[in-house]
Image (cartoon, rainbow, N blue to C red):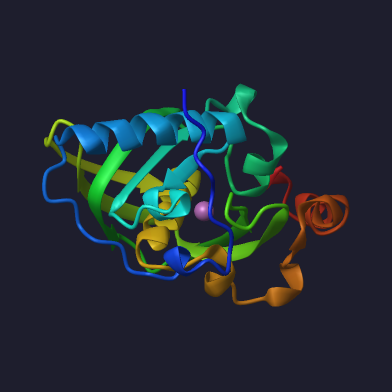
Length: 194
Ligand code: NI
């Protein structure tokens, strides 16, 4: 088991466009993914992109937890009661296509922006294509929290962190503070998101 060091906002590796992976089946790619899975589990996160562990390649992993097991902060990020669980998925050289002009705001967090959260607008429905570790093609459509997570992870591959996607910086703050104020207010206003 290897826990990798996670780069934090300000580190140049997080601002770079990552390189495509020529051979998804190469042993070093599998090894990187194993370490990233350990790192993600240790941090209790939903997603992790290779640049976050100082490897500037187009690879990200994520999983969507089942709703009853999910921490409260994922609900604030739009994980609804009807969200579908998605097992751990490895995306290599992913490409995203929005399927709607509709966008929705929800709170996001990031292991590279520890302790912080803010509201980020994202398209609500997307299609994404990628290669898996076996070199096989992955093509899925996603909505809501699932779509948000994939967009957040793929942004990392283009050197973009969630604060750069924010349109209202008054919602940016420390998780502990925002949880006690903004998230509560929002829950009262929109109980369906609670
Ligand atoms: Ni992130």
